[in-house]
Image (cartoon, rainbow, N blue to C red; front, side, top):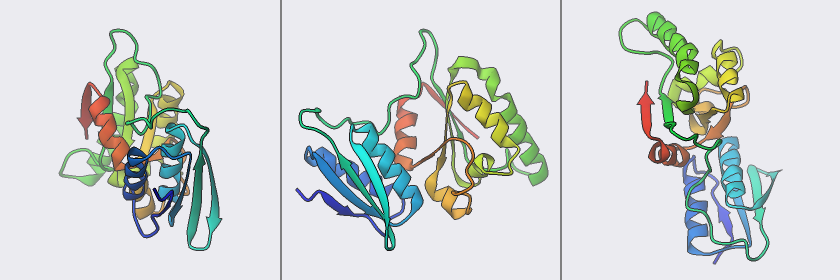
Length: 203
């Protein structure tokens, strides 16, 4: 089994999916992955860490080299890309919120932006049921420097809610380097979280 994967030229979640498939086909004590963008680097590194690998990355010409190593006898690769950020409390539901844009509803964008901001401010009222908040498309701008949403989201993160933004979306809007709160994620994780959640609220 080839333990060196060249995923350059691929956008997330393809590099993560490629690594996942490779590790499902064979238990490797070491793996090297080449990627050419920061979002893919962060996603692959985090995925490997969740599989029990010690991970390192370095810049190379045209991208990054990621290495993952682990000792013998560490067991089979987990089927899920990430464990829950917190344990589910007895009697509590796990609610995931998927924010798909900068505006809530259709009509006036100024009104829609105000409504979305008010929605984010009100999320703490969900209490311990609020599990994860994921941002895609223009919604990722709420996690970037200069957004009034950052303090709100940081408060949620401090309370144990996982905040995550689509890496491809962050790169598309040129805010990957200025993300202030949460982690970079990909569609594999988002889909997995939807499966794990008791309910998903999409706005």
